[in-house]
Image (cartoon, rainbow, N blue to C red):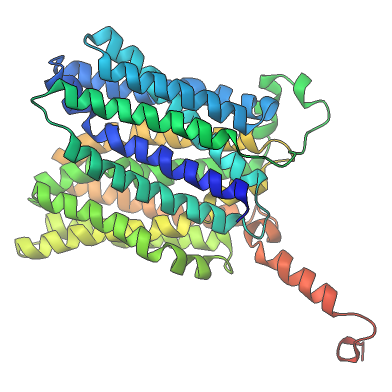
Length: 425
Protein backbone atom coordinates (compact mmCIF):
# COMPACT_ATOMS: atom_id res chain seq x y z
CA UNK A 1 0.00 0.00 0.00
CA UNK A 2 1.09 3.52 -0.73
CA UNK A 3 0.89 6.35 1.78
CA UNK A 4 -2.46 7.55 0.40
CA UNK A 5 -4.06 4.11 0.75
CA UNK A 6 -2.75 3.72 4.30
CA UNK A 7 -4.39 7.00 5.31
CA UNK A 8 -7.62 5.97 3.58
CA UNK A 9 -7.69 2.76 5.60
CA UNK A 10 -7.05 4.75 8.78
CA UNK A 11 -10.04 6.85 7.76
CA UNK A 12 -12.21 3.75 7.32
CA UNK A 13 -11.21 2.38 10.71
CA UNK A 14 -11.73 5.67 12.58
CA UNK A 15 -15.08 6.44 10.91
CA UNK A 16 -16.35 2.96 11.79
CA UNK A 17 -15.00 3.35 15.33
CA UNK A 18 -16.95 6.58 15.70
CA UNK A 19 -20.12 4.93 14.42
CA UNK A 20 -19.81 1.95 16.77
CA UNK A 21 -18.91 4.31 19.63
CA UNK A 22 -22.35 5.95 19.87
CA UNK A 23 -25.02 4.43 17.59
CA UNK A 24 -25.76 1.36 19.78
CA UNK A 25 -26.58 3.70 22.68
CA UNK A 26 -28.67 6.32 20.84
CA UNK A 27 -32.01 4.82 21.83
CA UNK A 28 -31.11 4.60 25.51
CA UNK A 29 -29.64 8.11 25.46
CA UNK A 30 -32.67 9.80 23.88
CA UNK A 31 -35.45 7.77 25.50
CA UNK A 32 -34.11 7.30 29.03
CA UNK A 33 -31.15 9.55 29.77
CA UNK A 34 -32.67 12.66 28.18
CA UNK A 35 -36.17 11.50 29.14
CA UNK A 36 -37.65 12.26 25.70
CA UNK A 37 -39.50 8.96 25.39
CA UNK A 38 -39.55 5.99 23.03
CA UNK A 39 -41.32 7.87 20.22
CA UNK A 40 -38.61 10.53 19.96
CA UNK A 41 -35.91 7.87 20.17
CA UNK A 42 -37.54 6.00 17.31
CA UNK A 43 -37.73 9.22 15.30
CA UNK A 44 -34.01 9.79 15.84
CA UNK A 45 -33.21 6.40 14.31
CA UNK A 46 -35.58 7.18 11.43
CA UNK A 47 -33.93 10.58 10.90
CA UNK A 48 -30.58 8.83 10.42
CA UNK A 49 -32.04 6.84 7.53
CA UNK A 50 -33.95 9.77 6.03
CA UNK A 51 -30.92 12.08 6.16
CA UNK A 52 -28.85 9.50 4.29
CA UNK A 53 -31.54 9.05 1.64
CA UNK A 54 -31.71 12.83 1.14
CA UNK A 55 -27.99 13.54 0.78
CA UNK A 56 -26.72 10.47 -1.10
CA UNK A 57 -28.25 11.40 -4.50
CA UNK A 58 -26.33 14.70 -4.33
CA UNK A 59 -23.14 13.20 -2.89
CA UNK A 60 -22.28 11.31 -6.05
CA UNK A 61 -22.57 14.40 -8.21
CA UNK A 62 -20.43 16.39 -5.75
CA UNK A 63 -17.74 13.69 -5.76
CA UNK A 64 -17.64 13.72 -9.57
CA UNK A 65 -17.42 17.53 -9.70
CA UNK A 66 -15.15 18.27 -6.72
CA UNK A 67 -13.38 14.98 -6.11
CA UNK A 68 -13.88 12.58 -3.16
CA UNK A 69 -11.46 14.24 -0.71
CA UNK A 70 -13.19 17.66 -0.37
CA UNK A 71 -16.57 15.91 -0.06
CA UNK A 72 -15.17 13.59 2.63
CA UNK A 73 -13.74 16.52 4.62
CA UNK A 74 -17.09 18.36 4.47
CA UNK A 75 -18.89 15.18 5.60
CA UNK A 76 -16.49 14.74 8.54
CA UNK A 77 -16.99 18.31 9.75
CA UNK A 78 -20.78 17.92 9.43
CA UNK A 79 -20.70 14.67 11.39
CA UNK A 80 -18.48 16.23 14.08
CA UNK A 81 -20.91 19.14 14.52
CA UNK A 82 -23.84 16.71 14.67
CA UNK A 83 -22.14 14.47 17.25
CA UNK A 84 -21.13 17.32 19.53
CA UNK A 85 -24.54 19.00 19.38
CA UNK A 86 -26.27 15.67 19.99
CA UNK A 87 -24.33 15.27 23.23
CA UNK A 88 -25.46 18.72 24.35
CA UNK A 89 -29.07 18.61 23.05
CA UNK A 90 -31.72 18.74 25.74
CA UNK A 91 -34.98 18.86 23.77
CA UNK A 92 -36.56 16.88 20.94
CA UNK A 93 -35.99 19.50 18.22
CA UNK A 94 -32.29 19.85 18.98
CA UNK A 95 -31.86 16.07 19.16
CA UNK A 96 -33.54 15.51 15.79
CA UNK A 97 -31.56 18.27 14.04
CA UNK A 98 -28.31 16.96 15.51
CA UNK A 99 -29.14 13.40 14.44
CA UNK A 100 -29.85 14.65 10.91
CA UNK A 101 -26.41 16.30 10.70
CA UNK A 102 -24.65 13.24 12.12
CA UNK A 103 -26.57 10.84 9.87
CA UNK A 104 -25.95 12.91 6.74
CA UNK A 105 -22.24 13.22 7.44
CA UNK A 106 -21.78 9.52 8.12
CA UNK A 107 -23.77 8.55 5.01
CA UNK A 108 -21.54 10.59 2.69
CA UNK A 109 -18.32 9.21 4.20
CA UNK A 110 -18.96 5.75 2.71
CA UNK A 111 -19.06 6.59 -1.03
CA UNK A 112 -16.34 9.23 -0.65
CA UNK A 113 -13.94 6.75 0.97
CA UNK A 114 -14.90 4.05 -1.55
CA UNK A 115 -14.14 6.41 -4.44
CA UNK A 116 -10.78 7.29 -2.89
CA UNK A 117 -9.98 3.58 -2.76
CA UNK A 118 -10.88 3.27 -6.44
CA UNK A 119 -8.68 6.25 -7.36
CA UNK A 120 -5.71 4.94 -5.37
CA UNK A 121 -5.90 1.31 -6.52
CA UNK A 122 -5.63 -0.66 -9.73
CA UNK A 123 -7.80 -3.48 -11.03
CA UNK A 124 -5.19 -5.88 -9.63
CA UNK A 125 -5.16 -4.45 -6.09
CA UNK A 126 -8.78 -3.28 -5.76
CA UNK A 127 -10.26 -6.50 -4.34
CA UNK A 128 -7.63 -6.60 -1.58
CA UNK A 129 -8.14 -2.90 -0.84
CA UNK A 130 -11.89 -3.33 -0.37
CA UNK A 131 -11.35 -6.50 1.69
CA UNK A 132 -9.07 -4.50 3.98
CA UNK A 133 -11.69 -1.75 4.17
CA UNK A 134 -14.38 -4.21 5.26
CA UNK A 135 -12.05 -5.85 7.79
CA UNK A 136 -11.16 -2.50 9.37
CA UNK A 137 -14.78 -1.32 9.38
CA UNK A 138 -15.90 -4.37 11.34
CA UNK A 139 -12.92 -4.10 13.68
CA UNK A 140 -13.66 -0.41 14.24
CA UNK A 141 -17.35 -1.02 14.90
CA UNK A 142 -16.60 -3.80 17.39
CA UNK A 143 -13.90 -1.94 19.28
CA UNK A 144 -15.93 1.29 19.28
CA UNK A 145 -19.00 -0.45 20.68
CA UNK A 146 -16.95 -2.22 23.33
CA UNK A 147 -15.22 0.95 24.58
CA UNK A 148 -18.36 3.07 24.34
CA UNK A 149 -20.29 0.56 26.44
CA UNK A 150 -17.78 0.90 29.26
CA UNK A 151 -17.88 4.70 29.23
CA UNK A 152 -21.62 5.28 29.44
CA UNK A 153 -23.65 5.41 32.64
CA UNK A 154 -27.42 5.79 32.26
CA UNK A 155 -27.59 7.66 35.56
CA UNK A 156 -25.24 10.42 34.34
CA UNK A 157 -25.97 12.62 31.34
CA UNK A 158 -22.36 13.81 31.43
CA UNK A 159 -21.09 10.33 30.50
CA UNK A 160 -23.05 10.49 27.23
CA UNK A 161 -21.95 14.07 26.60
CA UNK A 162 -18.37 12.84 26.94
CA UNK A 163 -19.12 9.95 24.57
CA UNK A 164 -20.44 12.22 21.81
CA UNK A 165 -17.63 14.75 22.40
CA UNK A 166 -15.05 11.99 21.88
CA UNK A 167 -16.84 10.94 18.69
CA UNK A 168 -16.71 14.54 17.42
CA UNK A 169 -13.01 14.71 18.28
CA UNK A 170 -12.41 11.48 16.32
CA UNK A 171 -14.06 12.97 13.23
CA UNK A 172 -12.00 16.17 13.55
CA UNK A 173 -8.82 14.12 13.99
CA UNK A 174 -9.80 12.30 10.82
CA UNK A 175 -10.10 15.65 9.03
CA UNK A 176 -6.46 16.34 9.89
CA UNK A 177 -5.35 12.86 8.79
CA UNK A 178 -7.27 12.86 5.51
CA UNK A 179 -6.24 16.42 4.62
CA UNK A 180 -2.68 15.09 4.22
CA UNK A 181 -3.71 12.52 1.58
CA UNK A 182 -2.24 13.23 -1.84
CA UNK A 183 -4.73 11.84 -4.30
CA UNK A 184 -3.67 10.86 -7.83
CA UNK A 185 -5.11 12.98 -10.59
CA UNK A 186 -8.53 11.50 -11.28
CA UNK A 187 -9.57 11.02 -14.89
CA UNK A 188 -12.27 13.43 -16.01
CA UNK A 189 -14.96 13.10 -18.61
CA UNK A 190 -14.91 15.75 -21.29
CA UNK A 191 -17.79 18.10 -20.59
CA UNK A 192 -18.77 16.40 -17.33
CA UNK A 193 -19.07 19.64 -15.28
CA UNK A 194 -21.72 20.93 -17.66
CA UNK A 195 -23.74 17.74 -17.56
CA UNK A 196 -26.93 17.98 -15.53
CA UNK A 197 -27.57 15.78 -12.52
CA UNK A 198 -30.61 14.40 -14.34
CA UNK A 199 -28.41 13.48 -17.29
CA UNK A 200 -25.84 11.66 -15.14
CA UNK A 201 -28.55 9.62 -13.41
CA UNK A 202 -30.07 8.82 -16.80
CA UNK A 203 -26.69 7.58 -17.97
CA UNK A 204 -26.35 5.40 -14.87
CA UNK A 205 -29.84 3.93 -15.29
CA UNK A 206 -28.98 3.17 -18.91
CA UNK A 207 -26.21 0.83 -17.74
CA UNK A 208 -28.16 -2.43 -17.56
CA UNK A 209 -25.43 -4.29 -15.69
CA UNK A 210 -25.34 -1.58 -12.99
CA UNK A 211 -29.13 -1.66 -12.69
CA UNK A 212 -29.06 -5.43 -12.23
CA UNK A 213 -26.24 -5.15 -9.69
CA UNK A 214 -28.26 -2.52 -7.79
CA UNK A 215 -31.29 -4.83 -7.64
CA UNK A 216 -29.04 -7.64 -6.48
CA UNK A 217 -27.45 -5.32 -3.90
CA UNK A 218 -30.86 -4.36 -2.52
CA UNK A 219 -31.74 -8.03 -2.01
CA UNK A 220 -28.34 -8.72 -0.43
CA UNK A 221 -28.65 -5.93 2.12
CA UNK A 222 -32.36 -6.52 2.73
CA UNK A 223 -31.96 -10.26 3.34
CA UNK A 224 -28.86 -10.04 5.55
CA UNK A 225 -27.81 -6.72 7.04
CA UNK A 226 -31.39 -5.48 7.28
CA UNK A 227 -32.26 -8.43 9.53
CA UNK A 228 -29.33 -8.53 11.96
CA UNK A 229 -30.63 -6.23 14.67
CA UNK A 230 -34.29 -6.30 13.66
CA UNK A 231 -36.13 -9.34 12.37
CA UNK A 232 -33.54 -12.01 13.10
CA UNK A 233 -32.95 -10.77 16.64
CA UNK A 234 -36.72 -10.63 17.27
CA UNK A 235 -37.13 -14.12 15.82
CA UNK A 236 -34.33 -15.48 17.98
CA UNK A 237 -35.83 -14.08 21.19
CA UNK A 238 -39.49 -14.89 20.45
CA UNK A 239 -39.27 -18.18 18.53
CA UNK A 240 -36.01 -19.72 19.68
CA UNK A 241 -35.94 -18.39 23.25
CA UNK A 242 -32.46 -16.93 22.76
CA UNK A 243 -31.18 -14.92 25.73
CA UNK A 244 -29.68 -11.47 25.32
CA UNK A 245 -26.26 -12.86 26.21
CA UNK A 246 -26.60 -15.52 23.50
CA UNK A 247 -27.64 -12.84 21.04
CA UNK A 248 -24.46 -10.95 21.91
CA UNK A 249 -22.50 -14.17 21.36
CA UNK A 250 -24.12 -14.55 17.92
CA UNK A 251 -23.13 -11.01 16.93
CA UNK A 252 -19.59 -11.68 18.20
CA UNK A 253 -19.48 -14.89 16.14
CA UNK A 254 -20.40 -12.88 13.05
CA UNK A 255 -17.57 -10.40 13.62
CA UNK A 256 -15.12 -13.17 14.54
CA UNK A 257 -15.89 -15.05 11.33
CA UNK A 258 -15.24 -11.92 9.27
CA UNK A 259 -11.96 -11.18 11.07
CA UNK A 260 -10.70 -14.77 10.83
CA UNK A 261 -11.93 -15.65 7.34
CA UNK A 262 -11.54 -12.37 5.42
CA UNK A 263 -8.05 -12.80 3.99
CA UNK A 264 -8.26 -16.60 3.72
CA UNK A 265 -11.43 -16.20 1.66
CA UNK A 266 -9.78 -13.48 -0.42
CA UNK A 267 -7.30 -15.97 -1.89
CA UNK A 268 -10.22 -18.11 -3.04
CA UNK A 269 -12.36 -15.24 -4.34
CA UNK A 270 -9.67 -13.47 -6.38
CA UNK A 271 -9.45 -16.27 -8.93
CA UNK A 272 -13.17 -16.94 -9.25
CA UNK A 273 -15.89 -15.30 -11.30
CA UNK A 274 -17.55 -12.60 -9.24
CA UNK A 275 -21.06 -13.64 -10.27
CA UNK A 276 -20.37 -17.22 -9.13
CA UNK A 277 -18.97 -15.98 -5.80
CA UNK A 278 -22.13 -13.93 -5.14
CA UNK A 279 -24.26 -16.91 -6.20
CA UNK A 280 -22.39 -19.08 -3.68
CA UNK A 281 -23.10 -16.50 -0.96
CA UNK A 282 -26.82 -16.90 -1.68
CA UNK A 283 -26.53 -20.64 -1.09
CA UNK A 284 -24.50 -20.16 2.11
CA UNK A 285 -27.12 -17.74 3.43
CA UNK A 286 -29.87 -20.20 2.51
CA UNK A 287 -28.14 -22.73 4.79
CA UNK A 288 -27.96 -20.00 7.46
CA UNK A 289 -31.73 -19.46 7.29
CA UNK A 290 -32.29 -23.23 7.51
CA UNK A 291 -30.17 -23.24 10.70
CA UNK A 292 -32.24 -20.33 12.04
CA UNK A 293 -35.40 -22.28 11.19
CA UNK A 294 -34.13 -25.26 13.16
CA UNK A 295 -33.32 -22.99 16.11
CA UNK A 296 -36.84 -21.60 16.36
CA UNK A 297 -39.06 -24.22 14.73
CA UNK A 298 -37.22 -27.45 15.56
CA UNK A 299 -37.74 -29.57 18.65
CA UNK A 300 -34.17 -29.80 19.91
CA UNK A 301 -32.81 -28.69 23.26
CA UNK A 302 -32.23 -25.06 24.14
CA UNK A 303 -28.50 -25.63 23.81
CA UNK A 304 -28.94 -26.97 20.28
CA UNK A 305 -31.21 -24.05 19.38
CA UNK A 306 -28.63 -21.56 20.66
CA UNK A 307 -25.83 -23.30 18.76
CA UNK A 308 -27.89 -23.24 15.55
CA UNK A 309 -28.72 -19.56 16.02
CA UNK A 310 -25.07 -18.63 16.62
CA UNK A 311 -24.16 -20.66 13.51
CA UNK A 312 -26.63 -18.56 11.51
CA UNK A 313 -24.73 -15.37 12.32
CA UNK A 314 -21.37 -17.07 11.66
CA UNK A 315 -22.54 -18.23 8.21
CA UNK A 316 -23.73 -14.71 7.45
CA UNK A 317 -20.23 -13.50 8.36
CA UNK A 318 -18.65 -15.99 5.94
CA UNK A 319 -20.88 -14.66 3.16
CA UNK A 320 -20.00 -11.06 4.05
CA UNK A 321 -16.29 -11.87 3.87
CA UNK A 322 -16.83 -13.24 0.36
CA UNK A 323 -18.83 -10.19 -0.75
CA UNK A 324 -16.46 -7.46 0.46
CA UNK A 325 -13.75 -8.06 -2.20
CA UNK A 326 -16.40 -8.77 -4.84
CA UNK A 327 -19.32 -6.31 -4.93
CA UNK A 328 -17.63 -2.94 -4.27
CA UNK A 329 -14.83 -3.51 -6.85
CA UNK A 330 -17.50 -4.60 -9.35
CA UNK A 331 -19.35 -1.30 -8.87
CA UNK A 332 -16.08 0.53 -9.61
CA UNK A 333 -15.38 -1.58 -12.72
CA UNK A 334 -18.87 -0.90 -14.10
CA UNK A 335 -18.46 2.88 -13.71
CA UNK A 336 -17.35 4.86 -16.79
CA UNK A 337 -14.14 6.84 -16.44
CA UNK A 338 -14.57 9.65 -13.92
CA UNK A 339 -17.99 8.52 -12.63
CA UNK A 340 -16.91 6.17 -9.83
CA UNK A 341 -18.25 8.64 -7.24
CA UNK A 342 -21.68 8.69 -8.88
CA UNK A 343 -21.85 4.90 -9.01
CA UNK A 344 -20.58 4.46 -5.43
CA UNK A 345 -23.18 6.94 -4.15
CA UNK A 346 -25.97 5.24 -6.10
CA UNK A 347 -25.03 1.87 -4.65
CA UNK A 348 -24.80 3.38 -1.15
CA UNK A 349 -28.32 4.76 -1.69
CA UNK A 350 -29.56 1.28 -2.60
CA UNK A 351 -27.91 -0.09 0.55
CA UNK A 352 -29.51 2.59 2.70
CA UNK A 353 -32.96 1.87 1.25
CA UNK A 354 -32.55 -1.83 2.02
CA UNK A 355 -31.39 -1.11 5.56
CA UNK A 356 -34.43 1.14 6.08
CA UNK A 357 -36.98 -1.30 4.65
CA UNK A 358 -35.41 -4.49 6.03
CA UNK A 359 -36.07 -3.94 9.76
CA UNK A 360 -39.50 -2.41 9.08
CA UNK A 361 -40.66 -5.59 7.31
CA UNK A 362 -38.52 -8.20 9.03
CA UNK A 363 -39.05 -6.98 12.60
CA UNK A 364 -42.81 -7.66 12.85
CA UNK A 365 -42.49 -10.89 10.83
CA UNK A 366 -39.63 -12.23 12.95
CA UNK A 367 -41.50 -11.45 16.17
CA UNK A 368 -44.91 -12.92 15.22
CA UNK A 369 -44.84 -14.90 11.94
CA UNK A 370 -42.02 -17.29 12.64
CA UNK A 371 -42.38 -19.91 9.88
CA UNK A 372 -43.31 -17.40 7.13
CA UNK A 373 -40.35 -15.26 8.17
CA UNK A 374 -37.86 -18.10 7.68
CA UNK A 375 -39.42 -19.25 4.39
CA UNK A 376 -39.51 -15.69 3.03
CA UNK A 377 -35.84 -15.00 3.65
CA UNK A 378 -34.79 -18.48 2.58
CA UNK A 379 -36.39 -17.65 -0.78
CA UNK A 380 -34.67 -14.27 -0.83
CA UNK A 381 -31.31 -16.02 -0.36
CA UNK A 382 -32.01 -18.38 -3.26
CA UNK A 383 -33.07 -15.30 -5.21
CA UNK A 384 -29.57 -13.89 -4.64
CA UNK A 385 -28.12 -16.94 -6.39
CA UNK A 386 -30.50 -16.55 -9.34
CA UNK A 387 -29.87 -12.79 -9.70
CA UNK A 388 -26.09 -13.26 -9.46
CA UNK A 389 -26.01 -15.85 -12.23
CA UNK A 390 -28.26 -13.62 -14.35
CA UNK A 391 -25.93 -10.66 -13.74
CA UNK A 392 -22.97 -12.77 -14.86
CA UNK A 393 -24.43 -12.90 -18.38
CA UNK A 394 -24.33 -9.08 -18.52
CA UNK A 395 -20.69 -8.74 -17.49
CA UNK A 396 -17.66 -8.87 -19.73
CA UNK A 397 -15.24 -11.72 -18.94
CA UNK A 398 -12.76 -9.29 -17.30
CA UNK A 399 -15.48 -7.53 -15.27
CA UNK A 400 -16.63 -10.89 -13.98
CA UNK A 401 -13.12 -12.25 -13.38
CA UNK A 402 -10.38 -9.57 -13.29
CA UNK A 403 -7.65 -12.20 -12.95
CA UNK A 404 -8.21 -13.02 -16.64
CA UNK A 405 -6.70 -9.65 -17.59
CA UNK A 406 -3.55 -10.39 -15.60
CA UNK A 407 -3.20 -13.90 -17.03
CA UNK A 408 -3.64 -12.59 -20.58
CA UNK A 409 -0.95 -9.95 -20.03
CA UNK A 410 1.43 -12.62 -18.73
CA UNK A 411 0.62 -14.94 -21.61
CA UNK A 412 1.09 -12.18 -24.19
CA UNK A 413 4.40 -11.16 -22.68
CA UNK A 414 5.67 -14.74 -22.62
CA UNK A 415 4.69 -15.64 -26.17
CA UNK A 416 7.51 -13.84 -28.00
CA UNK A 417 8.70 -14.95 -31.46
CA UNK A 418 12.13 -15.68 -30.01
CA UNK A 419 10.68 -18.24 -27.64
CA UNK A 420 10.66 -21.61 -29.46
CA UNK A 421 8.31 -23.07 -26.87
CA UNK A 422 5.58 -20.73 -28.12
CA UNK A 423 6.36 -20.87 -31.80
CA UNK A 424 3.54 -22.13 -34.05
CA UNK A 425 3.76 -25.76 -35.04
